[in-house]
Image (cartoon, rainbow, N blue to C red; front, side, top):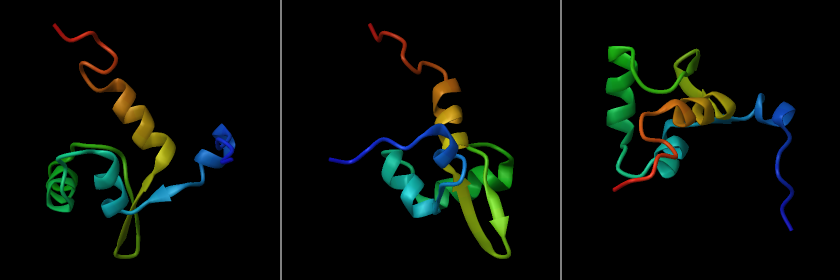
Length: 73
């Protein structure tokens, strides 16, 4: 059985752009790159040339997205 990560553990979990795309159906690495260029999309960090996305900030971005959790007609 897999135990859920604590909020403290999530603060130190980073995803690659490819891993983010797996969690966001229809979003490609190219789309993420364009969002970064335009200042949109989830928060990210650059470690040298490597782009990573903090998991807890990705979840916050998803939670704040319009229509998240809203009933669809």
